[in-house]
Length: 148
View (tube, rainbow, N blue to C red):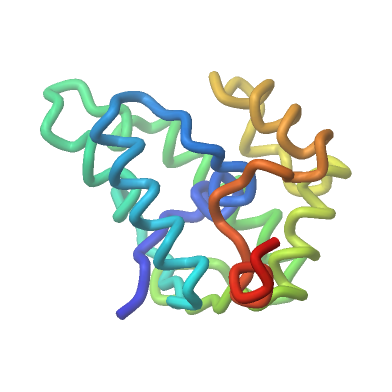
């Protein structure tokens, strides 16, 4: 199986520490974090994804807003440039340890943060990055095996 992620969630997964919109959202994201940490691959999707699933029943789910689509486009461009690939629907990404480290380094340095402008979680994510990603829930397979 693969985890379905919209482009801006490729950035969100880097700093996910178990906080979110609702308890159901956090439970869902924790399951996704475990799957990614166990080596499950990612397929990029256009629009709501596996992370959004816990929010889609709300009548005003922000997952459908134009502002989120803009965030996706910015993230797709930044991550695509970093990874030297086109990040669009159907693209596949495997979060091997070197790739995850490269993505986190770029995020911490602000290279891939355009999509984060105006995000309510931006300060939290900045703090997580500044602390060396110590409490993140998505870990590379090697980190999980070594108990890091």
